[in-house]
Image (cartoon, rainbow, N blue to C red; front, side):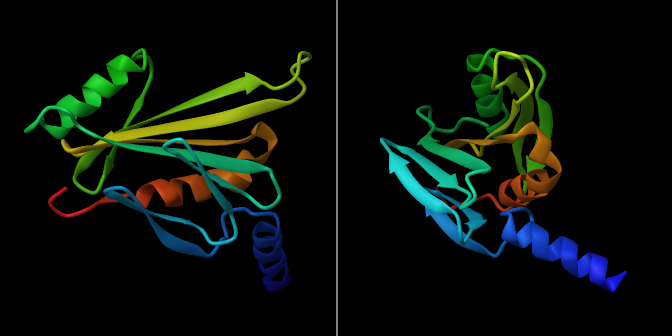
Length: 160
């Protein structure tokens, strides 16, 4: 039993899954925990973090609300509307609203490989953000707990 647990943790760690060491990362006025071993790049204003195995990555965009004094839920509703509405799962991160949507798309014409993209968006009335976590659909059990852990670590800078 203990050997099985140790093997599972070792496999998750070696393949980049949920048993990752995390570090705090600040993007503008947003802080979140990111995997230490993942490769970080920035293109224009989009932050990208990629697993060393290449099996998963996520992008992060952070912006400022243009209307002073906007309520967080109103802000989130505007973001969701701009993203086409649809079926978003409401979330609460800290005391602020957020939402989550999962899309699974064919990566090959025959549909044998699928890409799972989980989009998270949030707003505290001053800062907006989106995080898109992508991986092979076959690896979702390995990476979904990590994506959840990253998103649950989101915090806004005080007074920002």
